[in-house]
Figure 1 (cartoon, one colour):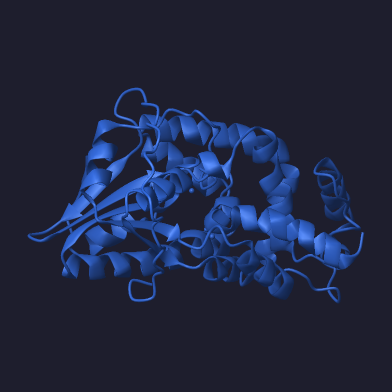
Figure 2 (figure 1 turned 60 degrees about the horizontal axis):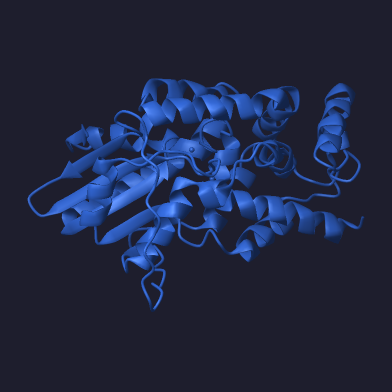
Amino acid sequence: MTLANRMGQAAKHVSRMAFGACAALAASAALAAFPGAAHAQNAAAPAAAVVAAPIPRAEGAGPPLWVVSDADSTVYLFGTVHYLRPGTAWGSDKVDAAFASADQFWVEVADQDDPNVAAKVAQQHGVTPDRPLSSILSAEDFAAFDKAAQGVGASGAAMDAYRPWLAAFVVAGTAPLQAGYRAEAGVDKTLMDRARAEGKTVRGFETADRQLRLIAGMSEEAQIAYLNNYVRHGDQIVPKLDQTVAAWLKGDTAEVGRLNRIDTRDIHQDIHRAALIERNTDWTGQIETMMQGSGTAFVAVGVAHLADQDSVVDMLKARGYTVERL
């Protein structure tokens, strides 16, 4: 297989992960959690509205929802899981009511359906033939990577020119798909389709390009640690994702945060910074801009951004806002 063909296959993996790029950085929680206010993108609503199918109801209170409001502005913050198994019951009356009241719908990335964005970044920042993985991984680590790559239908030799972050995307992103998880069943995609069908304005906090560049910009040390983590613990990707979904459905934000840290901060601080701190800081500023205006917005972002340490909720509170969990 030529490098161009291998890149094409990698781009397919990356495009599936683009709107949840940090989903791959925290595959257990962000795949349950790397996919500006003035620069956000608008997506045109379809000419004819389509009635969306009802979302199956979660048991109990369901996934977590927060609200921040003042005299003329309300922003709902809903923690999502980007990839779910079809039929997962996560709906609730409180989410329905909040969603219905909003005229704006915000997600991490509004251009998540454009595979060209991810492919371009992968080609520019995901391949370095002059610094192959075999030259920067130990012999033992490369052998383990080769075995993991064969498990997803590739090989270490076929992906030797990949940067560690891209190789990790391929390794980490395949297992959930094989286990039945699908982006089209995820909360973000489901609510985005519903928002467009109802004629709501759809906006993104960032672009897929920015998400992926944050990942590609991590130190090589962090990228190697990230890759080795999924190679060594590949058998735990789906079980941890299952655990995260279960905790999310129960509204157990502490457990979601704990699971997220296993694959971010516990591996390397650079991963935590790229996956959460930089992005959460940017999003908090954009939400503050919303609060300075008027109207109602419904924000749906990976639950790790709202439940984990250095969360958007914590950052809003630090800026003096009262954030209430509903």
